[in-house]
Amino acid sequence: MFQDELRAGTRTDTGQKWSPMGYRPYTPVQIGYESLYLYLALCPFSGQGYAAFLPKLTGEWFGWFVGQINSQVSGKHLLVADGSRAHKREAFAETQLTFSKLPPYCPELNPVERVFKEVRQGLKARVFSSLAQAEQRLRAVLEALFTGRQTVIELTCFPYILNASL
Image (cartoon, rainbow, N blue to C red; front, side, top):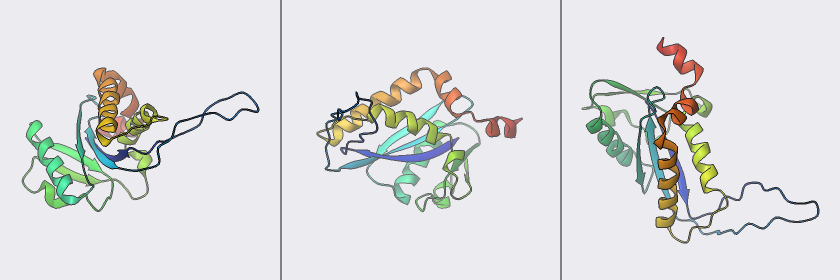
C-alpha cells in the first residue's frame, strides 16, 4: 500500500480556463482558508483504498490513521509513504504493517499523487462557504473515483510497481 496526505479547504483553486480572444474568463474565488487533510492509503494492485479526513498533519494523527488501517487488514502489509516528519516509525510498533519510505524529493514515485491530481480536478473553480461543504465535495469526488476499482488500478499501478512485484 502507498500513503500520502492532501491539504484541502475553502480556498478556491482557479486553474486555467479557455475563453475567446480578448475576453477575460470569469471564475468565482474565495480567498479565506480553513483546511483539513485527506489521509489516503491505497493498494495499486487491487484498487482498494483507506481514507480519513483529519484536522492536522501530525505524528499523532498519522498514528491514528495507521491504527485504523491495521484494524481493517488481515496479514502482513507493506505501507510506503514519503519522508514527512509526521510519518513516525513508532506508529507501526504493534501493527501488522511494515513501514518503508520513498526516496527524498520523488513524489512522482507515489501513486497516491496520481489520485490526488484527479481529486484536485474535481475541486477546481469551486467556492466552498464552509469546511463541511469542502469535505462533502471531497467525499463525492473520492467515492466517484473509487466506485470502479479498475480506474484506480489504471491510475496507480505504475510499471515500476508491477515489475518489482514479479
